[in-house]
Image (cartoon, rainbow, N blue to C red; front, side, top):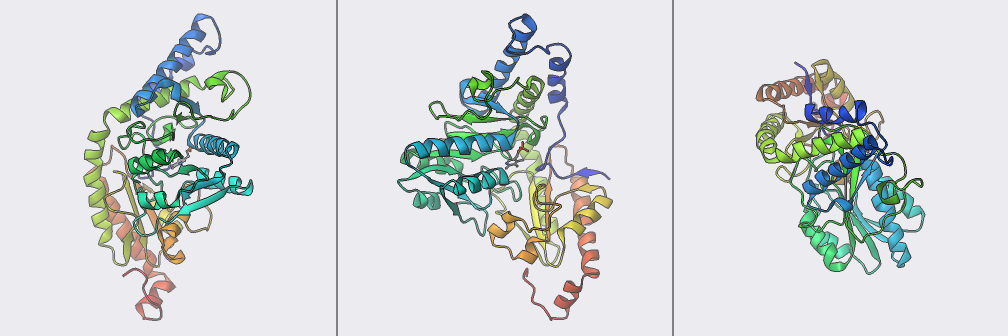
Length: 396
Ligand SMILES: *Cc1c(COP(=O)(O)O)cnc(C)c1O
């Protein structure tokens, strides 16, 4: 059996998204800035894609800027909000310790430039409380940036409440919603979101294309100097096929968001229940406030990389930590932020399932993980010490 269970890293493109792109490579390949008809047709398509994206988020098309993906949208949002803050003498930013590296590394750069960063604690459930945000806001706070849903443990943050607090205090609020868009219902106006990042390849669209929603009146920096594309904020000929694929995938995902969640959520819970039966294991993150497709576990005395390789032999594509940290020997910053011990954080497994998942596949994954964990423990000196009482179990 072949099971792709790494949809938080990237997804397979949907047929509709692929078909939406083809005409813009074969027929309507004109440059949207050209005046003749195939240029103008491309321009019209681009603007209709902007309307689609705006429609899905509940904003106006003028508030959408297309980017090369989630990382660029995050960078654009953070550097723009920081620069606007600096002009008013405000150099304090609030975020969390478990953001994506596109946010954390941008914050590191801002810190070097003299900004003060407060990272809120997410230990325990992996959910920030709005009260923590409220208490952290100071007169010199220029930005709150908190992800909508975490990419490793799938926990969903109370974005609407955080948005309301930021709006009341007059602080710009950005959310990295790359994991959430197309998976949970979002309305940027109802939730008082000022800036939001999204990326097509996390909802069955193409890689290398994303968008930033930026509320009217919030200034953006010119990220790429060049032509007048994207309101002069991002020069360069637009990625028309990619943007058409993004819009088609987003419309499709948003149209069937409730239907997909109704299918995936019970299977996710079945997977969680099955893995919880493995002794000395623990689910990472709140069991209810999480994405429909995310399952993330730690297993005592297990090394994540070996677990992945053996699961791959059984046909399962999974992840340990985020795609960006796998291949390095660092424990996941997200699991450390939750408060997991370093040795436990090394034994993590993320299974992120999509709409095409079946009960048969879920049962196969439970059996496979159970077998692989048992095998790895049977050859582990750490496990032997635990059995002989020479070491204490961390996970009960
Ligand atoms: C994938 C991801 C990103 C990066 O998006 P790219 O389009 O790959 O640059 C940023 N934030 C989160 C939460 C993600 O999951």
